Image 1 (cartoon, rainbow, N blue to C red):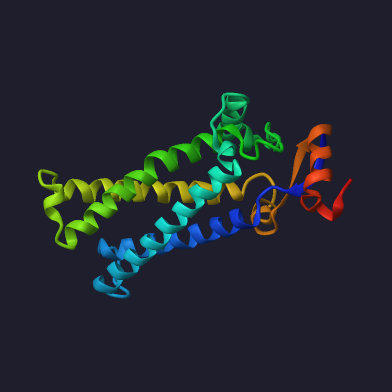
Image 2: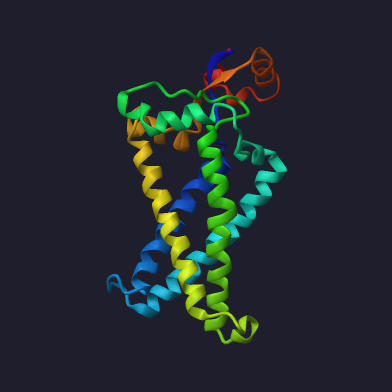
Length: 221
C-alpha cells in the first residue's frame, strides 16, 4: 500500500455533517430551555424552535439514509473486530503517552473500529430512542394521546431526556478527541475540504485514476 491524498468525505457527506451538527446544537439549546435550565427565548418559542429543528433533522436523516444505501457508503459504518483491541488500548492510555494511532484510513474503511462501533450505537440505539419518544411526546401534545394509552407520559419524557444526554456526551467526547493527536485544524480540515490521507492498494489507485481521477488531489499519480 502507498499513502495518497484523496477525497474521503464527499460533498454531500460534508454538508450532511455540518447541517446535522447545527440541528443537534439547536435541539440541545432549545431543549435545555424547555427543561427550565435557563430562560432566554421563552418556553413557547423554545418548543417551536425545537419542533422545527427536529422536523428538519428528521428529513435530513431520511435523505441521508437514502444516500448511504444508494452509494454503498453504509459499509463504512459496519463495526469490525480487526484492530479493535489496538484502537481501544490507544484511546485508553496510549494517547496519553504520545503513542501513534494504530489505525490508518483505507479506501474502504475511513472510520476506525471504535468509531464504527460508536456510530452504530448512536445511530441504531440512541437516535431511534430520541426520535420515537420525541414524536410520541409531540403527538400527545397535539391531542393524539389515545395512541399511547397505557404509556406513562413521564416515562416517555425521561427516555427522551436520557437519549438527549447521551447525545450530549457523544458530542463532548467527539470534540475532545478532535483536540488530541494532530492539531484541531488537522482533524477538522477533512470534513471541510473532503481531502485526507489514506492507504491505497495498487488496484484501488488504478481504479481512482481510471474512474474517479477528480478524487485524487491535484490529479496525484
